[in-house]
Image (tube, rainbow, N blue to C red):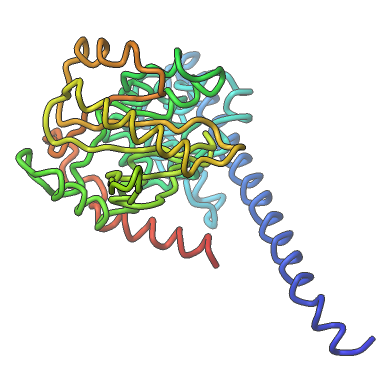
Length: 345
């Protein structure tokens, strides 16, 4: 076999091997993590049982930590603090099967962060499953918890139930939030629409993180020519899960019914000019500085295009105990940039 023939197929062959190795490494890392989390849960369960049956106190846990570290000096994670986390972990998740099948899919550090910040069991499960689905780092997870994602996810006012078939309507509803949190833009409440749009483009990766997984940016002030006239969509996205275009219009004022007329027009134009026959119907999202829910509900009632209406926040005061303990937007953007570069190599 000649060297020239070898060169023709070598590149594809090498790429295939690299992919297999990476996939094997990921599977191995997941298996190791699942075993570690399972071990920590078992240790925590045993400590709980001993405390209940024999009245163990904090001093026994301190001694246990000292003895275990002496026996396993190369093993991290056997400190008194971590043993207490193991106990709290087992107490929070009494179902071992759930731990093995779900909780064990995220790293221990993520689990500790959720234990520290989230007390409701349903909310904890939400953040665990979102971390698994989106591959969040610990910093991104902390940001999502701090931004109250659990309370905001799926809360936009929409007409999707009437305008989209199931399960598309349910998926679309669950992907939208209310309110959206744009405090990372560093703008005051009196910012104008153009200032907000400009800041969104400057912090595009952080902005896409707040919009949620699946939003692919198509363009800002996206030009459409209709009947010889020029029109400009504030922002146009394509959603990879919904398989449709998403038209986003931004208004710095309180919601007004007439805003929906323009958005409805844009949806018709995008459906006619950009939508492929395999794409789902284009969805509209109107972001307003504020909204009267009843007014928005009436305005949406007889519109036959799928539209959601949400408010957004530019500033929000953090609780005192959280200040200084969360990553800055610069750290988040640096982390997102690094992740993006890794994925495109």
